[in-house]
Picture (cartoon, rainbow, N blue to C red):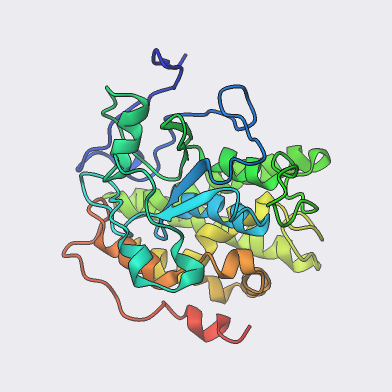
Length: 332
């Protein structure tokens, strides 16, 4: 049973420290807060535009899930968004508006609206003053109560993707249901297996110091990619068939980072995504959708991974280019 603080928010279970084992360092599954929009505590009302604010970062594939769902549903005028500094430092993600002032309008989001917060840990401490755990992104924040609503990327993406915000006039695409009730069990099953069989061993590969373990993890990663490539070869447009769903959001955020980041940084050099013809075509299809393309900044993602304090890259040298993505995405 998780411990719940007096304010009703579930604190993080463990603290991230440099030098800890691969499970601790790279794939932490604890969640700080799992509040729900549309409840008495966090109501969603017409006339309260951008009461709720999303903090994300271009480096982070998990935060990217929520950003894509927000864009696809056309919630830009409903949910505010701020990009953290792409490179994470040991003190936490910085809210210095560096990204806002340095990039193009359709990617940069908005300046940090929470004057009391200089970094993401400050947002956590506003919710739980005694907080001392890992402050991760995304963070969905209530600017009225000055409390975190939710930090679970899958829950935030599912909430944005469903019909829960359709009644707000500023929602541009209420007709789009990315998490239909009839398909939720199948979507959840895909996302669970994708996380367990691909995402988790992907991160573990980057941090293990044991060659035998590294080889086993590589086999898991590339075994799953081969299976996914075969699945996408049956003529389907999206993961679940002919309809775009949350499952595609989950799949995209790590696949798009594989060639330019994980291939090199985590030494996953057996094959590239571009060597899997059906996955390559699938990513090209998603790239044509604004919700995916306009929320992706590969250069910032590369810099973030290779400059962050908790990644296996010392010294912090950032490779040139976009890992070949421009060779098969430009012009799509």
